[in-house]
Amino acid sequence: ESNILNLDYLLFSPNLTWMLLSAAYLHLFPYDTTATTGGSALNFAYRLAINSVLCGAYYFYFYAGLYIMDGWGKRKFFPGSYPTRGNMVHNIYYWFLGVVQWTLYEIAMQKLWGSGLMPTPPTYEEIFSSAPLLVLNSATLLAIPIWRDIHFYSAHRFLHIRPLYRLVHSLHHRNTDPEPFSGMTMHPVEHLYYFSNALIPCIYVDGLSPLMFHFLFFHLTFAPAAGHSGYDDHFGSDQYHAIHHAKFEANYGSPSSAFIDRLLGTFREALGKSKEYTGEWSEKEAEKAEAHTKRVWSAHSYLGLHANSSQAIYDFCMLCLAVVTVYILNMGGLTETQATALGLAVSVGPIVVGVLVNKYFSKDKMSQLWPFQKERWGLLYTTLSAGVFCVLPVFHFVKWCAMIDQK
Image (tube, rainbow, N blue to C red):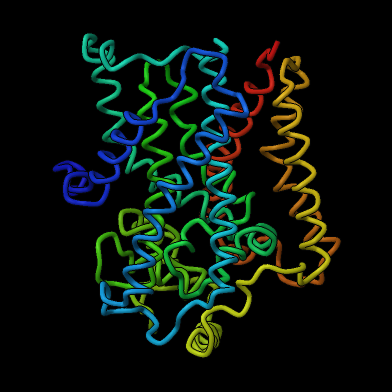
């Protein structure tokens, strides 16, 4: 509480650095909020190149310092464990898919602004000349790091429900001992819900500067680099989340949201045996994972064919959904009913298909609700918060984008 009231969470943390970098980034490469060219292929290629180079440089900065120069960090969580070239090809590939989806979100948002379906955001001059707008944007800017943490906790915990974990989030957990690019090494479906963080409040509240949208995305895309470094002694390192990668079903958020983990019994204070943890992850499984980590960095973080038919079926369905969605959004001009159907398909479809595929096309014998099957209020919180924070904004965003008249 005091950390929030005295602004320590912003002024004495990486959050201030990311906010300033985001402002500089947007000043050098501003959004097109009024013209119809916001959705052009040329603008997409332009922003994708910028995002890839600048974000990639930030990630490589940490990777080079910790894994190539081998001089920045002295306290590695798992000493002697390092990624292979094949591991890095795998991680950078999925990291790049995240940058592509980030850029698609940006292009779609510019189209909404330029089409008139969403009010044109105010300029800095308009904000500083209006007291209500100044208060609104200042309050939002201060709230973004807090909101990031709340949203991440809800989305992350939801992705640990058995079907979504097996078919989506397990890809991120192939790296039990992460390196910087692991931070955005995610299945595209996870990127979809993870990035939904930037939609609230930006698509619902009028009068917000484009900086709010960009700062949220900057935080979402740049922050994971240091937090997944694999080291404990550098700027932005995150022991709390490193424990999660090692133990899986614990520490779903950050130290700021640790009180939720404590309430739900999923807080773990150390990599070793925990006095507070009461979740489903057993010490026998933990010891097995630790032994595996010491033997090889990641045996599964390689590009290749699907290991099982259920994953292949799910990924094929999601690829078809993605191709159809991009095609329809590029055409635009859907009726409200048609746009609603597309919004539901994109926002709810990955969850429904995941449940069906895991139930009928896999040999998984565990509860569909594992590891939360014994919970009551925790499971209720997880599903409701994910529905409101992740599914609903994706639904509205896709629906409104589909209604843009491209003619």
